[in-house]
Amino acid sequence: MFEAYNIEGEKEQQLVIYVDGSEFEVEAFRRFAETKRPAKAVVSKIAAENFDGEVMRVGEFAQIYAAVQLGEAKLILGDMKDDIKFIKEDAKELKWGVRDVGGEVKEMNANVKNFTGM
Image (cartoon, rainbow, N blue to C red; front, side):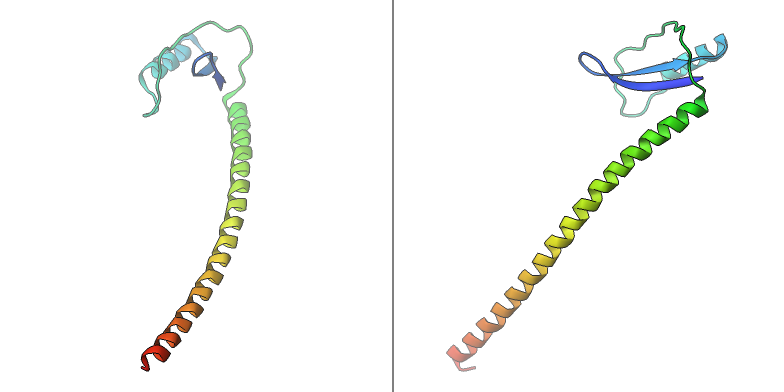
């Protein structure tokens, strides 16, 4: 049994983990949490306390977590879609600007030829 949640503490984010299993399994998880951390994790304190509530099964937690992550990914992809739309519009404007500059260069070349007689 396993659940994990990020919460906002008074001064920093906190990770709360609920683990249920045999005494050996819970102790093994606690030792693992104390010695293995993500490379960029900043850990100021680890506390272990008894919890009398129910803890969901790992598979159930994984499904809920995946659904939350998928929802966040959809929001991010939606924002990216809007950004791509604006980039395409900017590229079209740039394309017309390049055409205008090309026309001005041709006109300048004609003026130079007329002026120099070349």
